[in-house]
Length: 494
Image (cartoon, rainbow, N blue to C red; front, side, top):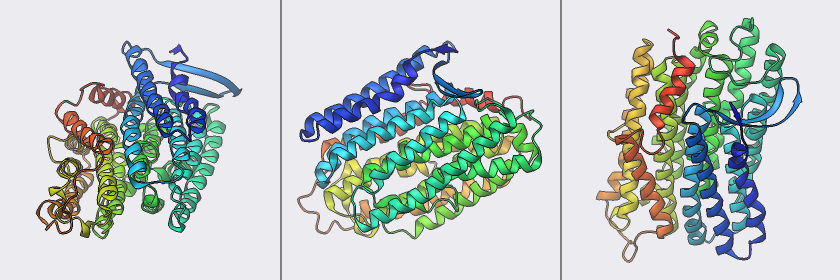
């Protein structure tokens, strides 16, 4: 462990960009320059931390101690770095895409939009680098507040209603997290994340274990989209598409599943989870969510809503992997965080490009669009096939390890769920691709691709999905990092 200001700088660079974005509101090019610059600096700082951590050093910034065992600490452990690379890297894609989207769609309040985006990524990196549960709590709540202006950005009655629903779910979740944090501190005198479980070996009673687990599950399960805590997520599709991408691929829901793995591996630990059969609760909820969300996706004609239910299901792949309490299952869960991020951001980016360019947002309106938007629909097809688990896209590899984790723990029902859900994924994505490529392109004469500011991020994200499927350790060592974290959390546990 080494004290360094780098984790603080990586978290804070987004916040530092906010006043620059606000004072440049009347000069869009300057405002967007600050957005892009902050995104690149943040990503560069995360990569610098990754480089310095190659020899096993963990960088941390200790800000101050509030009371004994309660401090604000930013710590770049391997799991936090894994999430930070994903969030900061995809922020670059989303920043360029957002410029093309807000200009193409003629969005109002663009300065507020970019400032809120910067604050969201500050909160997300804070969650990634939170060294203890108290720090996690602070940034988790900041993310809720920072995301609200983006959800209600359009200021329509539908957007306002979606924002209220979002706040009602997430603020209640925050209160549950506060209570759980207090109980954990009462039980242990500490709030530090500990591989193998902070609560392990503390004389936890059945009643206390169940109460803390239910509170934490409610707290992080909302952002993780676990049913029945999920309904805010489809409603939030009233937001602009880049916001949907932020919600579904980069920040909010990924913070939820990141929190689930922190709870399972760092707060309770596999031994306590198994001792009190808490993983069985998680497994049932996740398995049910995977299947039900996939079935609900079939019913959605609106493209973004179908993608939203797909997200609900795929988030529970990650939760299901964590609940297996096997090393390979945990590795698959962690790998699916990155895989789902690149694939789902591709799909939402594609949906936004279709809306801005063709003003179509329902699947029944997509006949023949691949003939005028071949790059966009080609990328969409890559993302759809990857989510269905078709090789060599990265979704196949993460699902493969989830399946191996099921076999490793002799959990055959989760394995069956994975197979069925893969078929359901193909089922609800096939009509979109079939219409786009084989439908009659009526009324599309004279149309082409959207702005390069949108198309290039779409194709790049799809390319990453393919590259990481073929070379899972390419660039950042995602495969090795997932393997290392899973070994630390589950290694040695039968």
